[in-house]
Image (cartoon, rainbow, N blue to C red; front, side, top):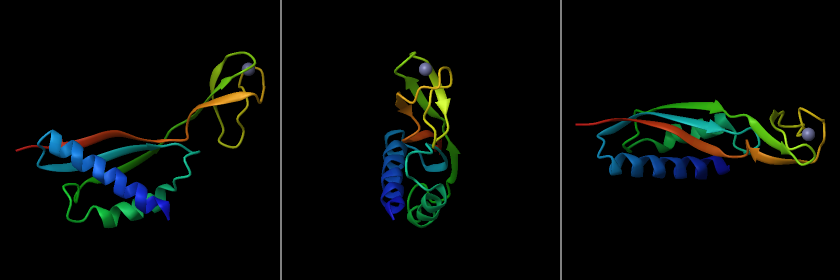
Length: 115
Ligand SMILES: [Zn+2]
């Protein structure tokens, strides 16, 4: 279950952000998860629910959104969105495409309270 390790790394980053900004607590975390990341949002959420206890993010709400799969076509140069299971160019239909995004997890925002 690599979501546990991912959740731990996520919380480590959030704790660092909160400390750097001298925040009292984290109230929300918004993540973008790509469909090709191999991360299962439900498992990550379950891991997070356990890991956040006794951290500055203990009461933070976790919002998970999906990000689009982005590709660039080697044949015609077009950049487009693609389905996770069909990485073909939206313009010319070529399957010779380079993955630009959709295989990663990004922390979109961390909501902090101060004082
Ligand atoms: Zn193309």
